[in-house]
Image 1 (cartoon, rainbow, N blue to C red):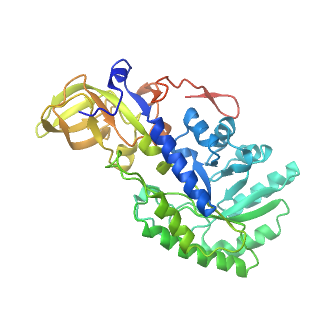
Image 2 (image 1 turned 60 degrees about the horizontal axis):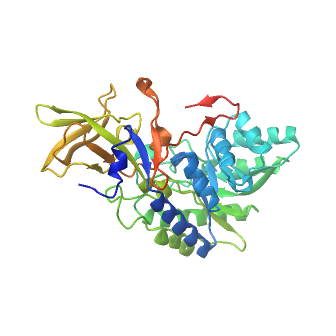
Image 3 (image 1 turned 135 degrees about the vertical axis):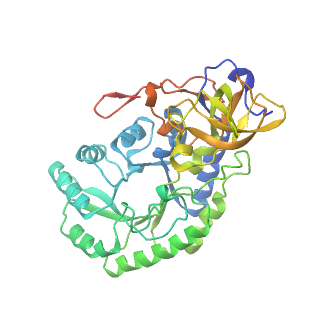
Amino acid sequence: MKTRFPLDQFQKLETPFYYYDVDLLNKTLDEVSSLARQYGFRVHYALKANSNVPILRRISSRGYGADCVSGYEVRRALETGFNPSDIVFAGVGKADWEIEFGLDNGISCFNSESIQELEVINEIAGRKGVKAPIALRINPHVDARTHHYITTGIEENKFGINPWDWDKVIKCIGRSANLDWQGLHFHIGSQITDIDVFKGLCSRINEIQAWFACNMFTPKIINVGGGLGIDYSKPDGDGTDFKTYFEIFSQHLDLQYGQEVHFEPGRALVAQSGSLISKVLYIKEGVKTRFAILDAGMTELIRPALYQAFHLIENLTSDRKELLYDVVGPICESSDCFGKAVNLPETRRGDLIAIRSAGAYGETMSSNYNLREKVKTWYSDEIISNEQSTHTPSGKQVG
């Protein structure tokens, strides 16, 4: 039986709900901030991993920048205390209103992914009488060795500018009076656990920036993206090796005088602090297996259904002998399954279940499918629900 969770409090709460270990979150944020300062690196938190308002306020209060991939995320970053000069806006499909919103609020940089996007940003900036700071997102053709849905740095991906367009990009910037070129941006994928992949990225960055320098384009900023993975099997372990991660870029990047190195971690900062807490509704005996049917489903945590992702599953209220279960949710989809043949203490109706390492791409990817309502969020330091209203830039309320 697990005792690290406040079970007395959990028993009083309506399930399912998200729970965040604030002490662990703070520890991780402070560790990464301290290490980055040692190397002179700049860290932007990737909002797509978790855009929970109180969590964002904690992150912004520690001086992190924000990496956004929509105008809505830019809006949320501004609302939660991130300095506009520390907000970067990436994304392969920026709408005109999103570009206008970023320009109107003086964000730090648009990470541009195509020649046509550069032309559109230049035209919009010209209408407003401003210069748009831009970086070029480059497709380095580096295999991240991760799930194919979250690989972003090879030629068949939709992301980034490919080598055969680099000459055209330089000419486009040269004739665009309203673009202020800042640097190069790279991001090769997510949940990267093979640290040698980042050494390969450094080598490729060195080659690419040398090509641009030969063409009289020396970047002020080298943005290496994010993607550092976590160990989903050890949510209570020693944590992610941020020290080695930063050391690799310090040792293997060939930097010019005055260049800045920027990072965009998301999952690695927040994933281990979050758990999805659920209750067992029924135990159902199958032909070759038994099912533990929870009141949480893929509407609360879609990663197992979408990516076949592993999350450690724990029974918090049973210390009986262990049996194997397929742990599933109530959604009318066969893919609504958190894990097959999961070894759990004998599980009964009413037991509390924790699905661990759910602080990234859990709450932020939740949905109202089957007309289910979004679940509440609770925090270890306050044990109060998060009932913050969220709004789009147009003022329309979203769930």
